[in-house]
Amino acid sequence: MTGETDLGRLLAGLDPELHDGVYVFATLPEDVPGLDPIMVFTESEGRTVIARAEDAHRAGLRGVFPNAWITLRVHSSLEAVGLMAAVSTALAEAGISCNAVSAYHHDHLFVPYARAQDALDVLHRLRSQRPRRG
Image 1 (tube, rainbow, N blue to C red):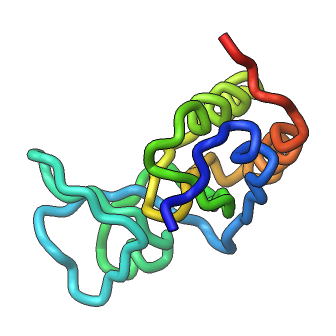
Image 2: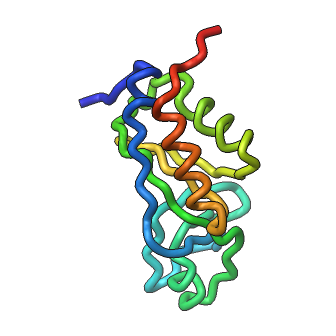
């Protein structure tokens, strides 16, 4: 299954899910025993991880950007055009910063923890809107 590419169907099916807990971004030069991050990305400066704040703290990592993790439960194709643009534009218009991670089945949003419910409200409103065609 390769996922949906039609922007209208993608927006209608967003179905955002807010995960429990606070997450942080941290960087490390190598794997840390006992840390089970939800994302790892290697850059030339080091490895970026996203992990639960308490796990990062316990591993001795200084996390930044306390955030909430929202999964867009629509199965979006990696080739879909416009979904993340629509989502990030709607969140930006509401003054909510967003760091997005696209995985094989879903897109994941990391928003300021204090704005999690605001972000969910924006995403639920976005579900009912029709995509703008240029």
